[in-house]
Image 1 (cartoon, rainbow, N blue to C red):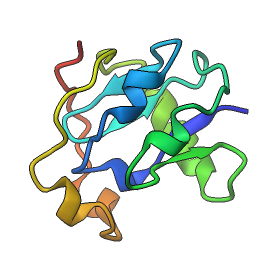
Image 2 (image 1 turned 180 degrees about the vertical axis):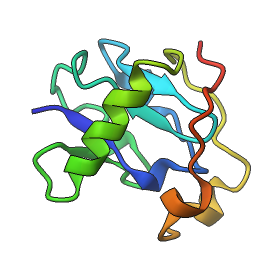
Image 3 (image 1 turned 120 degrees about the vertical axis):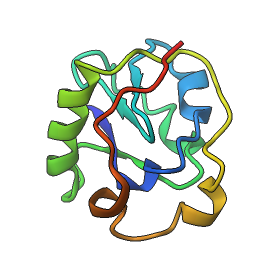
Image 4 (image 1 turned 90 degrees about the vertical axis):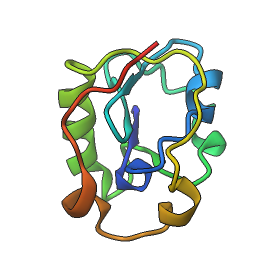
Length: 112
């Protein structure tokens, strides 16, 4: 089992999860984070730290699509190892549905 980040992170990018990760397996895109499935040690400490509840175990039914997305972008986006400010409209957009189709960007973030 591993953990994945789903579309609830898009346009939010809270990084509380990054701060508690013992193996630095988060990677930063322009408007979301992903978890590298081969680096995640399945400890689960990140899951309760995510305000929009965007982190799920890969055993959840909706996780299959997101496991592939996390794996793909973790290989190309820069690693992020420290907490940064969330995106400006994070609180407003965290519960919006259909964010992948509306806002997803394959562009990398800055990393740390």
